[in-house]
View 1 (tube, rainbow, N blue to C red):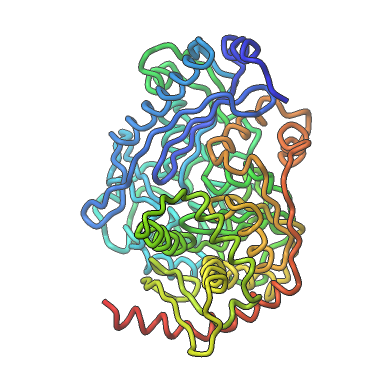
View 2: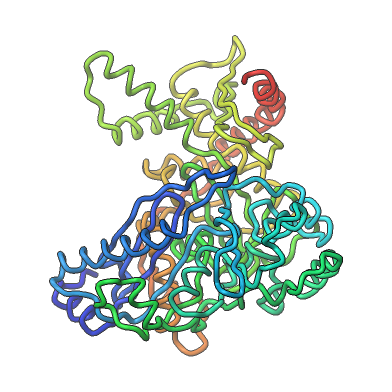
Amino acid sequence: MSVDKNTIKQLIEDGKSVLGIEFGSTRIKAVLIGEDNAPIASGSYDWENEYVDGIWTYSLDKIHAGLQDCYRSLAADVKAQYGVGIQSLGAIGFSAMMHGYMAFDKEDKLLVPFRTWRNTITEEASKKLTALFDYNIPQRWSIAHLYQAILNKEEHVKDVAFFTTLAGYIQWRLTGEKVLGVGDASGMFPIDIATGSFNEKMIAQFDEATASCGFTWKLGEILPQVLTAGENAGKLTEEGAKFLDPSGELKAGVPLCPPEGDAGTGMAATNSVAVRTGNVSAGTSVFGMIVLEKELSKVHEEIDLVTTPDGHLVAMAHCNNCTSDLNAWVNIFKEFAESFGIKVDMSQLFGTLYNKAMEGDADCGGLLAYNYFSGEPIVGMEEGRPLFVRTPNAKFNLANFMRVNLFASLGVLKTGLDILFKEEDVQVDEILGHGGLFKTKGVGQKILAAAINTPVSVMETAGEGGAWGIALLASYMIHKESGEELDAFLNRAVFAGEKGSRVEPDPADVEGFDTFIERYTKGLPIERAAIDFLK
């Protein structure tokens, strides 16, 4: 249902629109939504991380400037479309890439540059904490960064008064509240699902393990307070309003929802927060998330455990590589066409080549590919070497070539999710797909369904992304009905009547992918040899 511009203009003037802003790895995006939860304006700011003294980071100056420029871009879009400024809002939500380490002293000074999720400098801490807690602690988790700094005897650790994520920092800066949504918090330190907060037993274990260091702080004192979706997480202060909107037009007092991580906002944006649902985000990297009915039976270092924004346990298989090698091969075909003087439309080229894959043999005709631009911890590779391999008698044609590269983009993901499906007997009713792999209608969707032997749906709104997801969580805080759970709100107020396409797994394709993954697993020593000998 479309809403006329005058109605939207009045909504904005009345201060009833809702804002979501997400700090992604390469872009900060703002989305403003109306009463029907559909986007009515947007803004963005492009940025890149920096590699400084062996650390992937974003400076505080860039974080601040990026936030303000993104908001300014949104305000300009509102002015251009509706001829009004933003003086107030119904609610605001902030989200950001999860994990990482932002540590502050008692004077609120940042002690060391922000260490992002991308850093792989905490292997020792990750292994020791996983053993201590009997719970998988990946390298990118905030607690791994803190413990590694302790192991390294870094001078700053004794002065830590508070540490948090990027989303938690922005919330604190704008409201004065040291809080975090449970989904983002679950990437800092393990959550006790029964209490909805940090695991007290593991906090005590950590304090005992670090007691000899002589710190004046205990872990529970320097972590943020954990909140669940729907709770109020503070109000925009006078200082916060001027910081977000230096023009002074935006007034203080706007309520903020709990700040979340990009995994949680992706779940909200794809309506996959209910138990036995899941989503696969497939772009440069790929990760699959499934909302669990119960705890896993044992620790799997290949699987991260996080939560939904309303505190349900989620198993995540995170893979570093997905479409980069596919895109590189498509560019080769573009060069080939242009060598003949043919002007190429990239959307048409992707569509043609992806659809060609549907004509290939179910098992890719015996071809094999690895798409590793970077390492893949799930299969034990610390670096990447993109490879294409075939036997002399394999069926080498364009359809099989495109099919094997599409299969390879999901090879590591299948390896990770098979642990859940085959070893843990995790049940899932449907997977929601979103990201670049699904742009060509039906193709990526059909291949993912074959890889995981589960129905896959793609919604028309799947491209709206995490900024829309955190706007929905802010909307939930102010618009939920009494006692209404997050999944019920999303079904009622956001996704009712949502047009999407659902693909059931084709038994022949499922069998073909299983054959391919056997070949893929047996061939991993080829990838290992390439890493060892191709420098």
